Length: 148
Image (cartoon, rainbow, N blue to C red; front, side):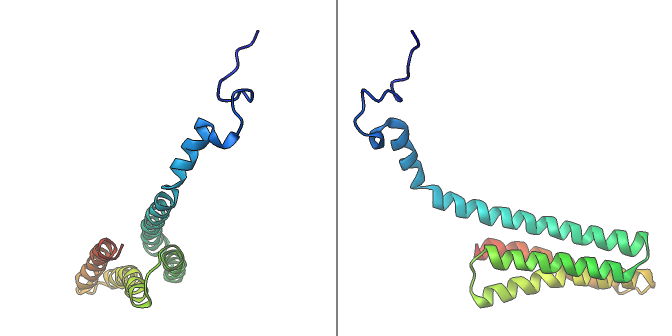
């Protein structure tokens, strides 16, 4: 004779809604929305940082390895726009907060691009633009901590 689980035995329960595992799922669902929102925001920020990494890889590979400035600019533009659209779609901010975020996202890689171009033509002021790029990344992280 096979042993049957008490939970699945219909003879002992008149209603499925009162089964222990159903009650446990209902209890867990109370907290689902908060965990889902937390996970979505963190996933969006992680993908945002990955897009920054791809942006800088594209800059270094296309501009320095192959010497194609238009390829570097095009790749960077695609990744920057994707990062901005992701933030706009996944995180609910006011219009001003989104504008500040978009500005910080766009200025950091753009300043790095300008620094890279100035470095290739041997202009000594490229350090200033690299400082702007690093500063914008730092401000972006601090802004995320403040707003989210």
